[in-house]
Amino acid sequence: MDGATFSESKRMSHPGPAALPRLCRMFRALLLLAAVSGAYLHALPCRAQSLAFTLDVEQGLQFGMDKPRTPYLFGARFVPALELERARLGLVFGPAYRNPKWDFAVGGQLSLFFPFSVRDLGVRLAAQGEYLPVAKSARMSMGILAEAFGLLRIGLWPGYDFELQRAELTLSIGVDLMSWNRLIAGGQETARSY
Image (cartoon, rainbow, N blue to C red):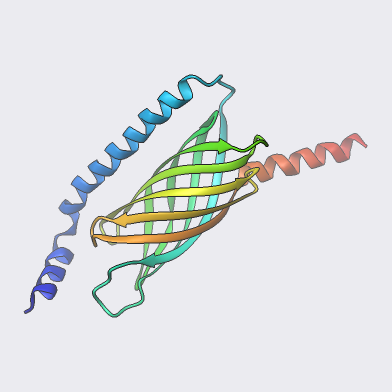
């Protein structure tokens, strides 16, 4: 049995306990980002809280694979979130395909929005941590997303899989369903006023 096969079988037989310290590190990183965000938002005037429900579809690659398989990643992420001024704190869940298996991601996301001259047009920086129960793996990613009024978001997500110890890069496209709801409700209200 060569070293690569032995380490692969060892990782597959006991993946659960190895993921727990990685999840703790991921959680600490999210807390640190929350503390930095809190310091940034402290000086801003506060407006009423609102809800966001984003839906993103992502696909990408995993780098450094030592097996001759296609390192393809695909997933959909649903993120119900609480929005306060420019910060957004949400839960992440959704199906994930990591060649050759399907999994389900659960985790959290913290993001900050930096508007351009128009209030709802800008860039969102996000940190996301996920746990994949089938693979018993933790994943951390940082995203930079271009957002247009919540109606369209396109993002680039470099990430890291702690179990496989591989870097990942995904591209996402998505929407905020609550923004679409407000747009449609506003259109119906305008139509009724005529």
